[in-house]
Length: 299
Image (tube, rainbow, N blue to C red; front, side, top):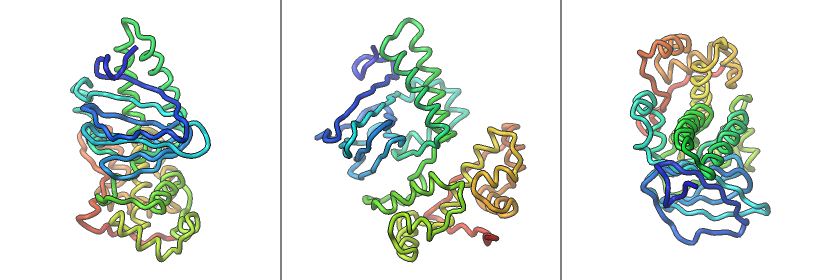
């Protein structure tokens, strides 16, 4: 069995905690830890910043970051952690996926969509089997599964905090609104609907949202939609119009304008050039450097 003390750079661990369990000390590792909460809810503390995790959430803890966990609620909390020394991953994988390496170097919460969550839990099940009853082939299987795990998180995950300003306090209402957006970006969301969901006035939420994220509600919502559309452009043969609708845009022309505003190219060009492997792109919105001027939503 691979454990924290005995492993070859990758190991998996599953524990079921009672809601009253609290890790009374913060600790850190020299490896990356990816925490998946299958059931229950908990508070994850990283570098003195508190994050609330619900069932289905995933949290990346970068190597060297101090962290601890406390559990809450009324049901047992099942958590699975995947620990990996990044230098055991083949160099050619990092050369192809520098974006994944960048994500693993910053601690933060990730929301996995429903389809990806089912696949992720099945993958974790097989990883646990290889970890707990290893044979001569288990490490190779774990390595392949680890690569699949990283790709899955990148493809199906919404990295909720990647666009937030660095802050020592993320209030529960903004945390809830970000999660609501991540889970419902395919719907025709409005600021008023999100504000009602968390029992705040739209005006107050708008001000607070801009203060915490550095962008407006509409800019952040479009950012999430455009980011997810990139994955669909790369992994499906769906038309640009279908992808626009599936990502929550009610107009393909508005989608194209937003896409070009963030990435500098049209969705069609992005897809074509990405497939030829000669086009470097980013979906990052430079929150603190500039304001993004999106076109007027026809809605």
